[in-house]
Image 1 (cartoon, rainbow, N blue to C red):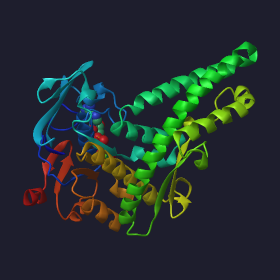
Image 2 (tube, rainbow, N blue to C red):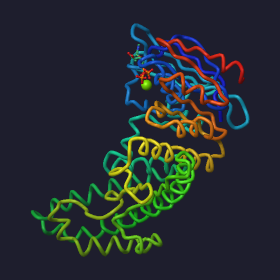
Image 3 (cartoon, helix red, strand yellow):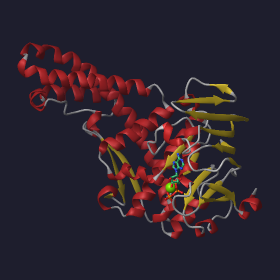
Length: 374
Ligand SMILES: Nc1ncnc2c1ncn2[C@@H]1O[C@H](COP(=O)(O)OP(=O)(O)OP(=O)(O)O)[C@@H](O)[C@H]1O
Ligand SMILES: [Mg+2]
């Protein structure tokens, strides 16, 4: 999958116009606050996603403009297609191949992309909830039915927790607890098994990439760390039975705590480099490389399941990487279409093939290098 043309109108600070990216690596460079991230954000929005900066739709329209329009021509499923989103006050309209869609999320899966922005470092730095949600989001992209299992689990868990809180004052409710336990254990076990399998594949893929970016010096290990011990989750049935038994044994604790102390909502992803926790011991460059490896692996697994290569959008990843890591990233990322922003024009010189675009006060200009390579 690749984008051949991008058009902007009234979008953030970007000057109205069109750019024609190359099928390989596109470097977008310029000093701070010129519009580089805005450009990546535009592509991300056209892929049907919400802004990775958490922006509201109204913030996307250029100050003083009535509307913003984003348009992409892209090659996917063997043909040229188009995606368009128009933002006007209080509403937005999305079009695929000129046909109006029910919402922008209808573009999801048409123009696929994965994005890395500095905010994604929270994947390492924040608590387990962030990592669980990364894995859940990634699984949903390749297994949409997983979303239903997750929401059913969340609902059941909330109901069981409410019951746990009510039991001390209504002891007759104790008898109803078992029915919730059975439902929760069965859903919980499915989630644990699905996540475990996904994390295993993701980890293998990320480790390969990480070894490349670190020149063979770092071994990345990613594993699923569950409140259900590994010897008790060899099959979904075993995991379910373990969770059920645990809930039975720890009923008093759960009632005292007022919440459920076992299940996938307590799990985490363990990420290590050369045996040490990246969160605790990793340097900034290592943490950045590690998130990049996970993002590239996520992209590879999507590609394997939808048989189209998603676009890779990398915002400001080069700044904390040494020159050999930058070199690897720019030149060995494979035959994907990549959009990468950076401040230093020097980074562009490391690019053996591909295009470079300079962004200055919202104006995007294609470099000479671009002409040579297209
Ligand atoms: N709706 C809008 N209308 C006009 N300008 C906007 C709008 N939204 C954001 N901007 C401006 O866009 C500018 C560029 O933002 P952007 O985040 O793309 O910069 P950047 O080139 O990525 O910078 P950095 O290197 O610091 O990350 C900001 O200074 C901001 O004021
Ligand atoms: Mg930026």
